[in-house]
Image (cartoon, rainbow, N blue to C red; front, side, top):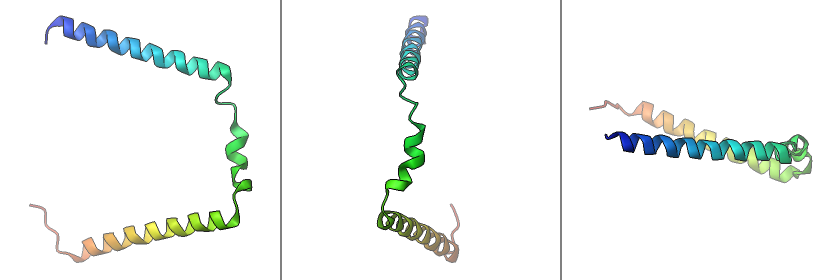
Length: 80
């Protein structure tokens, strides 16, 4: 690679990184990350049915993963 390509890549990387740092500092100053109570109290506002549905869905996904693992164990799998 020629030196101007490396210089351009370095310049663009520094520019994009500085934009990210400025955005992070702006968000911290504006208080975007100050809402810690929302996530802690979010469960209080969910209904029991929603929580039960989420738990059942998680259990079904876990069962499917277990079945898939078991079927792979039963096959005589040999990588080529």
